[in-house]
Image (tube, rainbow, N blue to C red; front, side, top):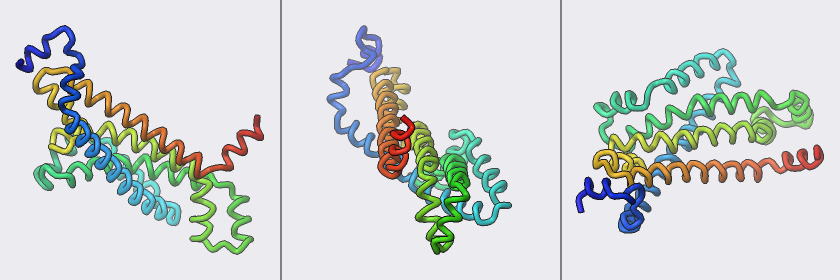
Length: 228
């Protein structure tokens, strides 16, 4: 049966037989989507942390840093990938350059805001206890800024999951490959499959990061109990 006939059928919105027959492809594309997302967020977080440390140490650099990362964030994804392909080709590097660039503004702002939000009394108490600047930053500032930092990671992760689908246009799209395939054949099943799994993946990763935040901030649960 041709794709056009299948698409015209009364039950063509989602053909479960097609999904089952392509189970191996689904697993492969899902793993590819996870890999591209995880790699982009991890690299983006490392770069953003370095930029945030510079911005916190040298306050005048915060404006230029957010200007550049904000500029990168405003570039349309299709235009960015079209610009990169002649330079880096249809490769994972091309997709990651684009994906990482879209995480930086979100992460830098949340990291800096979170650390700036640590009460000065807490910082002074840590200094009085003999904490050196780097030890205080790692043990006190970052810990107390965890909710804001994880909030940034959640936004960046969900955004990246969505953007990965677009990289299907350069052969690196994970679940986006199903959407691209469905659009090219006017067949709704792969479109629904790719979009549905992308949404589900974004929700699952968001919930997992929220769970990580709760594990890393046990004092927050204690404060909520006291407030009740």
